[in-house]
Amino acid sequence: MESDFDFDKLVKKETINLKGKGLSDDDLDVLIQVIEQSTVLVALSLSDNQLTLSDGKLANAIAKNKSIKRLDLFNNKISHQGIKHLADALKQNNTPLKELYLGCNNIGDEGSKYLADMLAINKTLQEIDLSHNSIGTRDSLDRIESILKNRKRKKKKKLNFEELLARYSMEARKEDNNESMLDDTASDKSANMNDDETEEGDSLRGKEEEIKKVKSLEEEKQRIEQEKNQIQKRLIEVKQENHQKDKRLKMAEERIVQVKQEREDAKQDAEFARMFANALVVERGELENDVDLAKRVADEAVREKEEAGKVAEIMVGQKRQLENDVEQAQRAAAIAWRECNAAQLRAECPICNEIGNDDVVSSPCGCVMCAKCVEKYIAIHVKPQCLRCTRKVTKLIRVHR
Image (cartoon, rainbow, N blue to C red; front, side, top):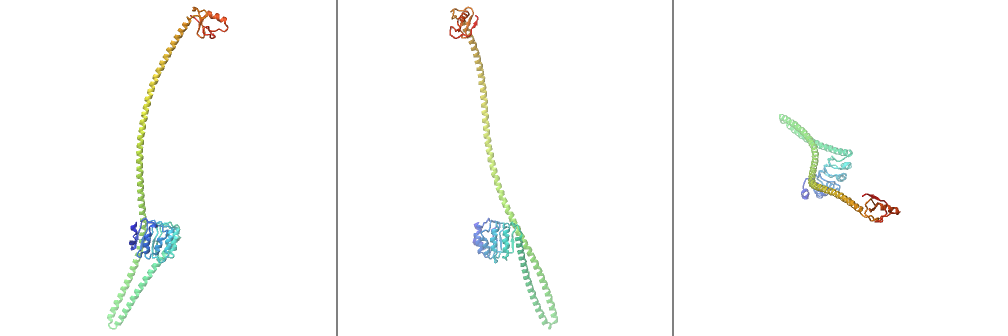
């Protein structure tokens, strides 16, 4: 960037091209000094940058310059505020600027009004490009077009007047020459009539040839003027086409940058997808480990269940054994009870102290007495008691031997 703003080099140039350098208003300090001091600068291109002209410095420098004729500010960020500074600067009628390109900015209706008011004072501008500037109304544009058309028409009339003046002066000189030739011929006519007639015919033929040459030159000049106008129109069209091409090229460059950014984003997405896939693989491995652990736990539970079944079978066997033991114990208790009863039946009666041979009676407490002794005892006592354990006798059971 610094190499583009070498003051010593720029101040000597007739054409300065800083197109597409990404310049802002703060980057123009050296260039403004060049514009103010240069006496040879003719064309300045600052298209495709970020200029706003909002500080008025560049506009003031253009107003001070006495040589610049072409200023290109195509495709910047100039609004109606920046145009106001530029219009105020160009109202100075001594500016030599003839071509001003402001296409693809954002000057709007207010900015076009500033330019129309400026053209009413400035007499040097011949061409202004205001394409693609968000101008909604035609009032200011019509004023600008009308002023420029009248200016071109007046210029053409002036050129035609000068041509006619030159042509008339040329014909007047030719007539003077012809008159002088006729005078010479008349003076010599008395000497030699035949020679005079020959010379007069030659002069007349020469005059006709000169008139034909003048007419052919005029026709050639008109044809050249027409070609010149066509070439100028074509140059304007080519400039506009170049601006459009530059704009499309810039859009293509922006699209390339966007595609590169999308490609970088796609790479990042792919990298994220790869990392996510790796995470899924790790998670899958962990899940497989968990499944294996669950299988081992399930196998362990199955084994424990089998062992529990075996333990249950053992407990069932033990239960059955206990039931058998209980049954055997009950049988042994029954046998012991019978033997005990048999022993009691052989015991002595507490009343008569003899071993009963006949039927005996057993009280609820299990004591055995003779049936006859009990009947006598009960008959005597109102509240009979067992003579062995002194318990109240409520019921007697007769036991047969």
